[in-house]
Amino acid sequence: MAPPPRVDAVYQRTIGELRARGSVLWLVFAPLARDATAAALREVVAEIDAGAKAAAERAELYTALLVMAAIDPWGHNLRKELIDMVEDKEEGLLRRTPIIGEMIIEAERRGEERGQEAIADLLGRLFARRIGRRLTKRV
Picture 1: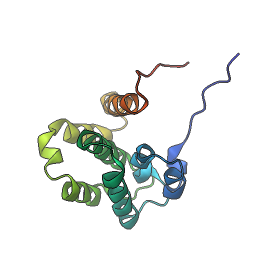
Picture 2: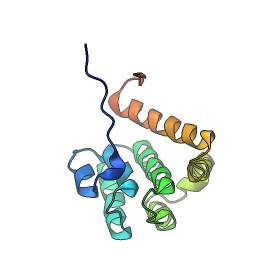
Picture 3: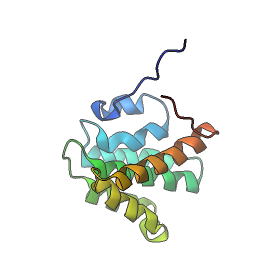
């Protein structure tokens, strides 16, 4: 019998621990890290900019980063600064893809089912592209 899937509480990690996983994908969780600061997120945005393989991947990673900032379990309140940082790197991202703004608004209402579904949908697509296959649900 296979062991049950492990749930990784990324919001309990530090940015250094996320970075040590060796993939820019993990950096999208940086706004949830215990030690998230504006300066640390500026570095994360630069790492995503340098580490993304293509413009589309970079835009998806930035989108996930912004959605994670809207969740903000520690009360860092870095969403506005992060939006400015991303817009500096990926000018017009929010205007080109209005669904991002909608997802951020939904994420802010994280107690509502639609917000959770929007986050799950966005991250599911991002992870599926990253691993090269559709995700499967485990119970």
